Length: 209
View 1 (cartoon, rainbow, N blue to C red):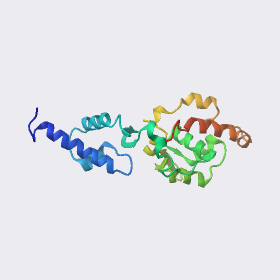
View 2 (cartoon, one colour):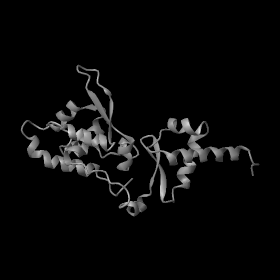
View 3 (tube, rainbow, N blue to C red):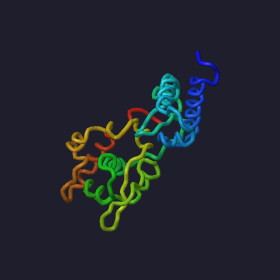
View 4 (spheres, helix red, strand yellow):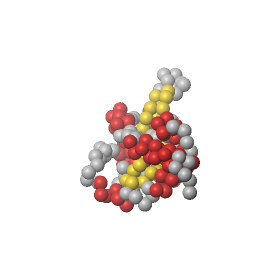
């Protein structure tokens, strides 16, 4: 057994600092963010230990898109369903736009409209930004330097994805017509069917934080 102040004590002090940083965080943290507050140490070992310690608890430590956060355990999500603030339900156009961004990021508004085959209302992107599912991702170095959009760690956490690799298959969604431009004049006629595909692709299986 290690004596007080030895290596084991030092390791315990570090993972407790990491735990405190993650517990107090208002958003998912990258390893660099954690180190900025917890200091130097074996971060990988600390995260592994905390994930194991919290694995059977009511809250779990999970990684989403390379960032770490505490979230309600899936089997306990229903307990807080009435207590937590529920984000405004996204409309079909927003879900379709979100799916396109997720599969093509970084992508510009013009590219989104080309893929959808119809114009994207400003309010659609505003709703996704307000929900913190997308973020500005710099400007495309083309004439006009349009803003590009990409998904966020909050998007991954909400839909229970560790990374974008966990999204449904691209070929599958293309076969459904979601990710292909429609011929002129068909956007309105096929809009409902394509929006339902987006809804099915992105809808979480159960309520999540």
